[in-house]
Length: 531
Image (tube, rainbow, N blue to C red; front, side):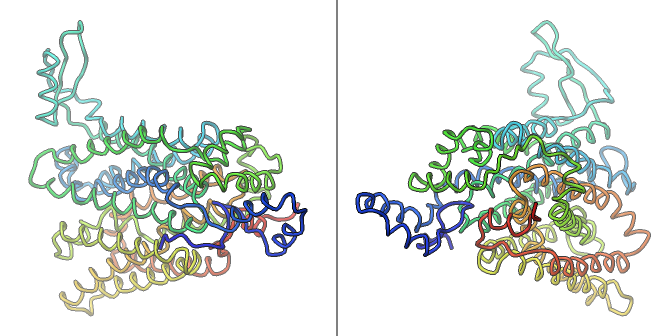
């Protein structure tokens, strides 16, 4: 899959030199022949993909955290509602799920401006801060009792009992500890985590697109979805003991602070996006990071391509109005609609509430969650293998068609004409097929495709707009799914999801171009209207 082919394009996002250009090169004077020979070797081999791989893998930690926080409330939701006193209240259960999505909307809304202002690396590190704080937060109100304790005793209580928190430090010698149980504190912690969730994924898509060699850009882009799947599976597995161990759901939240801290630390050693550095006038640093990512023999050609595509546009001057109804409206509309249809397909309703749905069908929730995780991961691996072979557009079309078929099976399973056994098989099989089909296209492709189709000048900010649309719809799906399931019933609700999947097929067929094997400059020229 990642073998090093030859006679291909020179760098991460840059066009090949044509055979006519090579002929012209060979016609130069003999005293330059040695230089040109070296230059041709440079131009006719691909960069070493192993150089950029570690940087991409570190960036995908934010996608792991994204997936983890999407699924972390799935299994423990029942015990959370019991502990915090809102068991049976589907609206509050939906609020626990959706609060981090509200925070994610805020984070994603500003992600492009942050990424363009401080750089991709610093944006990753900033996204880790609220995730660490939110994950570490026990509770913020409803104090029941307080004690004056030595710091060591207080630390022991914090480790041994999740109901304690440090309420204050007095005279540098003692701590005040308190027991707390509060839905408000839970929601505030989820809101903080969500802010980091919203900031991280758009930056990850930007970063992977800008640092990856073009011949493996689709494969590397699939790593984002695979990391999300691993995060979801990790959340589902770590939530299994929540029914047997009181307060285990708190551990499920706290443990996510560890990968967030690793992300912040490891990013200090990763390369910055050369594109961002070059646009900021830091050409020497851009060359140094190109050498880290592509190898020394590809630096000159990569910088040359950047200089040819640089029209003096300033990333800082991009206004929101330019994205919404200006000359870039078409590509922003395509990106926003893709993310909207992705969420309206119902996928995150499956991830958030699969335990509840499977339990109502008589399937043990532990088994159901593992099956969902395996289906998601399997589909993502298939997408990784096919992304640079079949292309983005083909995978999107096949994925949404498969999801529509799977939702059709769910509708049939909810029909009164089927016996319990057949309905159970169709319901479980349909949901697993739905997740598998999603992971093969609708899941990984939008996050990879959009940074490819956006012109470099607006790339970060356009991604933030599209991700904001994603999070708004995600928020309402998480908030209202259980209520709609109660009021409309599964048959009607799954029919609505299937309809949106079919709408997505038509939209992709009419509006989405294939970007496989194209440089970012070629894609920009194809989509950008003439001045």
